[in-house]
Length: 276
Length: 313
Image (cartoon, rainbow over all chains, first blue to last red):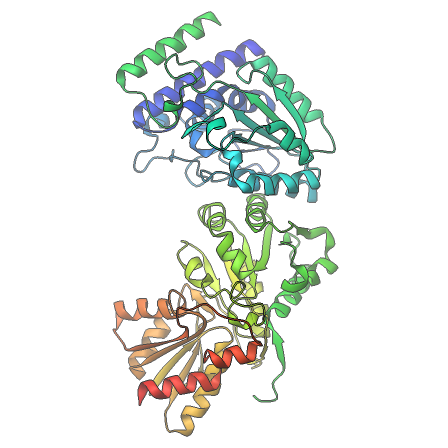
């Protein structure tokens, strides 16, 4: 896919996020929307994966450490062909294949159960270590929230990955600057994020605009070409990106759009799509 | 029994890993800076390329083991029971238990027989914690032979296991030609008609000693080794309870939530039976030589004998 096609696909991912959370009447649209470019780029360009063979032992792995933004991942997996798009409107409902947080047993394409913050990154490090120990060439990616890195386990995992020089591991920090209780600078600031990871022996890639597909593409290329150290992409993003009334609003962390809000949001995204 | 060979089950654990490493190529062993104490160092020496030290980071130890298991490895994650079940509980629950991953937790230094290190390191709560995780198999071997059998069974059975080992040298009691280890199956070590003593771990040996003393008093005690705490062998337990009408549980663990808890839950639903729970009586431990502590907390043969005698008189 070329960059223009990827941009259009990211917009489709955003529409699906609204469709799923609106149907569910709950969920986390804000942090799902902020990372739409990352989901899209990973599943449509970067990763060596096959939706028809989701358990391929040699596939690249993706762990959604910030598991509450499952709607973003589910929307991407549906578009990529892992499961029917109709599943999206069953999100969070009893008996659904799409649990509130990612679950391997329910959903094809999920590489580890997540939802309890800080744990996904630790499992991802285990996957990368497995590849190193067994001479496997697959890469492992994990997406973290900026609030999530307040969890101590993130730094236990980072210390191990840096020490072991796991250059087959790429972490992405979605720095949308907002967590549940407010801006991260007003809760328990993890800044400076890049310097912290550098101190843990990571190759740090700062991305000024993580909602810009060109910058995302360049960052993943740099990560792939980096040898001798794990990479972390620290990307500034806009929480709620693409939906006018959600952008940069802390209140849109874990609330779903009602019917009217859904209509306005879909109109916003239609306009963005037409402009692309 | 007096001349029996003694060996700590943590030693048996390390030896078993090293012995089975050649047979099972996807076996990997992880530790958290305690390889010398948990005895995974024995495996490390034999298979350094399949040993991973995660440093003093037990939560990450469990997460890394989980990630490896998703890729097809059979990881043994080892540290002290206190940290494996306590500190890392939620990682074990969410990253290992919930996805039902093939991680084997080798928890050593369980119970008060840790000895001199004292209450901070004497984990008497791990069985209770681990029992609440759906799909977790829990085994407490009673001696060297059973420890090795349990490690093999854990490798050969898919799914998460919690294996509990001790620091204190315990007698070898299962050196019979007909000994057979089967996950989820209790073993009747001595038949009796007056009282059932359901024991696990190092208390199995104590229970046998107690049964001998009780016999001298004319009390016929049936001793059953429940090496598997979950799934509990309810069939065997209920049959024995119906026969004797009285059940005593004996474990180096809190009387809340471990074998005693499991036995009471099973019996109260199937065949309500009077139960005496012998164990740590909802208190923290203390420093001291292991043998002295086991005596003080009445978990040795004499202690179990005294408590059973007083209860059924």
